[in-house]
Image (cartoon, rainbow, N blue to C red; front, side, top):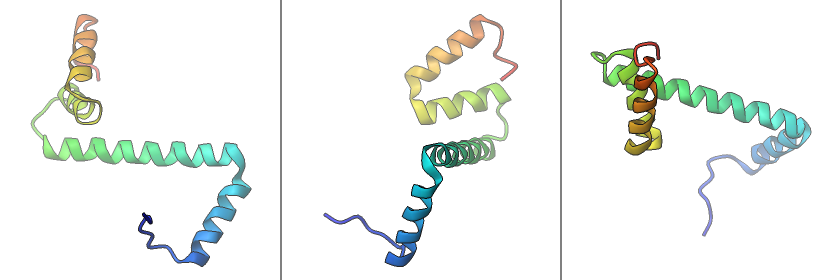
Length: 88
């Protein structure tokens, strides 16, 4: 089974060469930057879809969406027990 690829073979070769030249640290920085961007975009989408929720409730919606209801329940319980449910 082949993986669909909308990148031309020449562009793909250039991308692979650039990633190899970047080394492990450069690839890690790129991965961390992309992950950070994706999380920010996801949090923004959760906030847009739930404008009436508090910051805490938006954060819990994010956790539930990405990590599941069970972890969200545990995080909520943990933060509430420490009085941090209004500072998220």
